Length: 106
Image (cartoon, rainbow, N blue to C red; front, top):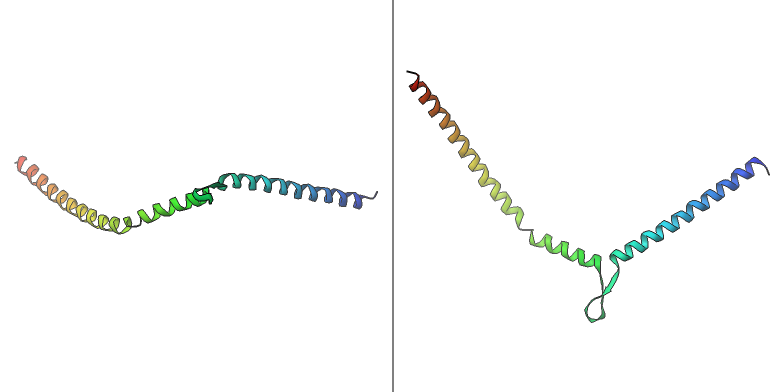
């Protein structure tokens, strides 16, 4: 048997092993996905997927929290005004402290 024939045979065996491993792991993935998103019987004999229930739950959360964005924008505007007011108070208090310190030094 020549070296080229031996190398071709080894390559063929390696490729076959790769494809067999691919099929086996795809089967394991398929079984696991079926277990996660598998069907169970809902009311009236209708199948219900666990994944579809999760999707419906996530959609419900999205709908329920959809109104938060405009309120957060309003809240940010109010908090910005409070921050600006506190900065003005801080500035005024600095002036008062400076005046009192200057008066106490006399």
